[in-house]
Image 1 (cartoon, rainbow, N blue to C red):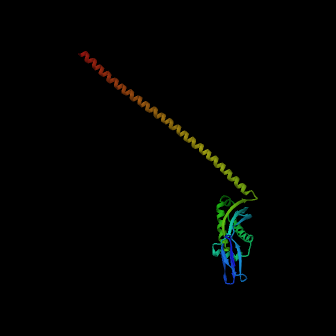
Image 2: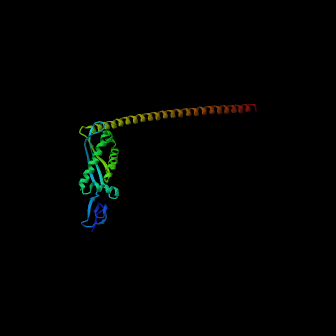
Image 3: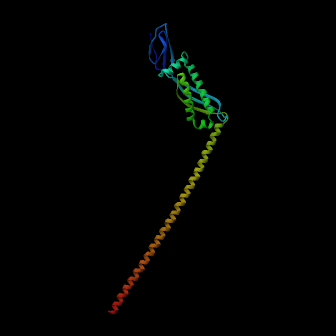
Length: 241
């Protein structure tokens, strides 16, 4: 008999002339009734809500973290599919999800214990990448690949994060006040410098005007002398004539 399956599951045929068992992901396979057995394993993507409650961080502050992970059995990789079949064949999706969830939650707690609250709170991307990396290297041995992991929520019962946020807000306000004061100071300096340049320009202008007036008067006096001299010479010449 021919059996078929969609792309979201794999078939494993064992029994007579099937050693090792044949694994088919998203296709069809011929099975001899009674002497061969067929089993199916789901390849659906599973969404896991990874919660770690009241984990003590590196400095001893307890916090709770919730992450969202997408995992699935990798059917296109024969080695991973074989490992998944050894681990999960005959188990339901819920049982597979529970095993993957326990593994992810354990790694999430371990990473939280090695980081401070500030590191987790301020750099969520770094925390998510570490959980993804460590969990992926572990789950791959089970034939499960981690499609994605995202840190969803961080909270605590000691108001530590609230205090941290208030301190950050106060720092931002302080930086804003300092920035405003520095901006006013710089504006005052620029304004004083502009006024100084204006006064200097005015002084230079007045000096240039005074020089021009002096030069004019000197030249006028010279011209007057020359004119008077020639006039006197002309008068003398007339009288002599």
